[in-house]
Image 1: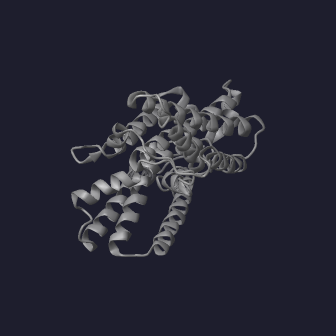
Image 2: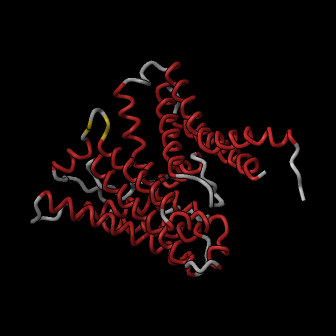
Image 3: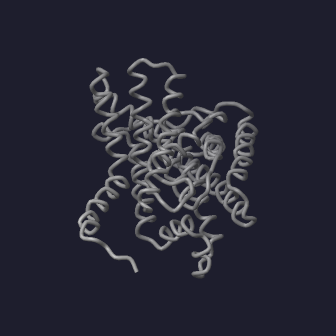
Length: 332
């Protein structure tokens, strides 16, 4: 039997406090440091217009990253979200421009079409991956090509435009300087936070990421929980398609290229472990902010696209290395 010395007991509160800082405040402190750096070294970073730009620019990545969080928490990955978003967008673009519908009916039809496409693609990924216990990396890589090809086929490789004016107004609407589309993303974050922290479903997703066999032995259907996680990821891709259409007033079959990498980066930078079982959607929110603030600040400094890509890649690698040491420390 092990015993604790008085020194060990005295140090335990400090260990707990440090763990709490590492898990909950570290990402926020990194974001704050970035904001302070760019506020000092750039002239227009903290202007209201630029803050609005940042919120608008991170919206689609944040929506995709919310769904990606569910998948990564179970130890999976979804490389198809960018292509699924493009496929959902062109289907919704076809729906919203159908003749014979009023603006409200056309917009409603487009929203249903986009979310349905996202759900079906996500469900397909989950069923194939979970039923045959195949690596989600391979399955979603296949879906990436399927969805991109479907988007090009449905649209005949043409951009779709001429949406109802009310839809365009929604994409550019502001409430006290905050873009409405960003508010949609925040609502999704709050819903995901509630699901992951206060429902049996959410806790079991963490359980699957930590110890899938234990969840199975406890009598739960791991298969359906995995399918549900991928379906949620597909749903958020469909929602992102609607926001993309509203913001840019177009539906392009080549939209979303590389978006899956940005979504994964936001989740990983936000502290969610690639091996699953550890992380939070609030961390994902902060991770999306870090990527958005970094990209915006580097533009204001005057760096080229190539340098911004290199620096963003370095930040992702640093986040993964820090996650390794954070996991090692908190497990000790």
